[in-house]
Image (cartoon, rainbow, N blue to C red; front, side, top):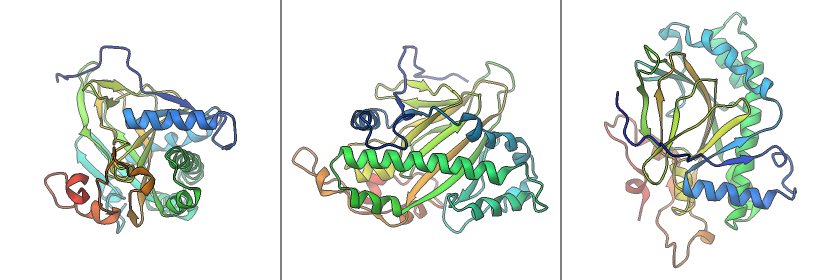
Amino acid sequence: MGVTGRNTQEAKIPVVDFSKIINNTSSSCWVEACAQVCQALEEYGCFVATLADGADEYNKIFGSLDELFGFPKEIKLQNTYDKPFRGYHSPNDVHEGLGIDDPTNPQAIHNFANLFWPNGNHPNFSESGDGYAKVVVRLDETVTRMIFEHYGVDNKRCESHIGATDYVLRLHKYDGAEAAGEEHMALPEHTDMNLTTIIHQNHVNGLEVKISNGQWVPFDVSPNSFIFMTGDGFQVWSNDRIKPCVHRVMMSDKEVRYSVLLSTFHSGTISVPEELIDDQHPLRYKPLNHLQYLASQLGQNYRVCVDNFCGL
């Protein structure tokens, strides 16, 4: 299929090195990195985070995904939760996903594994899933602290926000093209309804980000890189300073693309901090009940945008 707007220039998604700051918020690089992160989120709604060590460990989770997605659909359909956008979904013939609610709880990952491997024969999935969840949750908490600090919001409110964050670990499979070079859209253009998304993928490319001039920029795979995206929740919190990342998945490789995502949601209400309201930035949103916003999307043939849901 033809694709319009594909970037032909050398535009790149901004890259921020977290190797020296992920466990050290007092490092000399911290303030500079905070500014880099927030500039990228304001301009792109995303950035690439690189971690120095541990690639072999947090890539282990990909080793079980062939077997996991090979289970019959009737088993995958048992991956359900009471809250919306947590469990199995298959929006089209080339894309399906599974979810683990509350992956910071090892028992939640173990329960998910037992759904597919009730006899305990899963290929170290619980161990690799737990290890991966720890890495990406720590990254998300670090970036959240960067955002709050950069915009002058105090640490007490930051920690309250982190404490009210719900995490979902999502596993996605995208079928490859029937023939090399025959590109197809596996996931249409969209923004995420959550607070943040952290994506790590196998060696197969496909994820693209739309920049302000309308062009699409690919996320190039490397073993120690993650793409961090902001969604509708941070658009509201930041009073429109941070934009949600517009992205899609285009498959041209014949191989299957696997991605592992950490999605974050607020368990209560998201409100604009007073520090982000001034003459140049008048209040644009009423407080957003995040769960109600997600629930409003169910059964709809169209996306209920956040501006219509809680905009002033």
